[in-house]
Amino acid sequence: QHMESKQEADQEAAEAGVVVVDETHKKKLRTDTDAAAEPVVTGDALASVARKNEPAEEDATDGSIGSLAQTAEAEGEEAMAQKQKERNPNWRDPWAGFEDQKPAREEGETKSAYRRRAKAVLARLRRPAQRRKEKQKRRERLNQLYDENPAEFERRNTKPVHYSANENSLRLVLDCSHDELMADRELRSLCSQVARSYSVNRVSNPPSHLYVTSVKESSWLRERLISMNALRWQDFHLRTESFEELFKKEEIVYLTSESDEVIHEFSPEKVYIIGGIVDHNRHKGYTHKLAVEKGFQTARLPLAEYVDMKARKVLTIVAMMEILLGVHATQDWPAVLQTALPKRANFKVMGDDDSSEAELKSSCSCS
View (cartoon, one colour):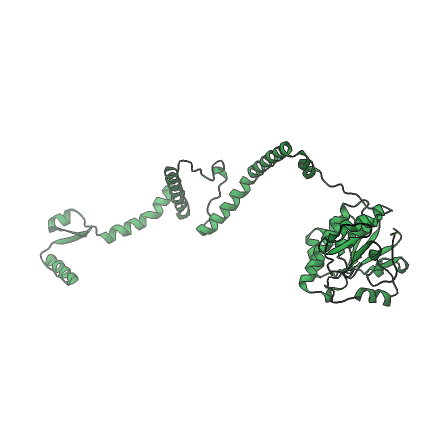
């Protein structure tokens, strides 16, 4: 009804020779004389003229739609910063000191993407100052520790001495040719024990020439060890070949808990093989059977002669490494076994009245 009444009013005005101009919803009536003296411009015409003038206005300011948007965004950021300061007088602009290095928002880049990119740039710029602060805090903590506990300060700041293998060093081999017998969880445990064995070897005096053999080229174990930078470990040899291809048969001594021969001393002229298998006693006597079938010399450690144990004498790879390296350096079996055997089951070192609690994990088929 409103539209019909408006059209009727316009028609009556046209018949009377009056021009009607609708501007901001206000009607102004003019006579034909006034209309002839002054041109009539409607709202649509004004909008059309404004659109035509937009390019000319951009050229006059040497800008573009993108630059105008960036300018408006920058002004908006300044206004937000001002509001933040008003709300919190302690607020500090995160880009303070790096204003000239703040990246500009690229054309077509979303706000969230721009914020992520700017955040990464700001973190990189702040990193040197943060490192200086962390070093200063570390110095303050060390100075406080030196004043309160000098002995603990010395222990924390004394780096372990690392030695290099020489002509008197043992040759120890971890035989990792039993992947098919282990589950994924056991493979991860094997990898962890290999890394710990390297750590034990590095602080020994003298360390051994440690070989990890039969590691397949595309195996998970090899990829994991390489990711741990194993190819650059000192006196550590990661090989795809088996120990049979690397050493002479007469040099090889396979250490197993089922062997009848007991070994008391270790010689650099021999190569001692440790079975790299984590099976939790599912494959009892497996490595001993393989060694006998291939005609290798086998031997076991003299645990029964030095330790009173009720559990089966099967040790972890790490415990084997500690025993072999410790006995080779000191020739003191009781002392080495006391420290190297796991501390979670009941065992008693011969000649020692005190009983130690340890549990011998059934983790690798060696003794």
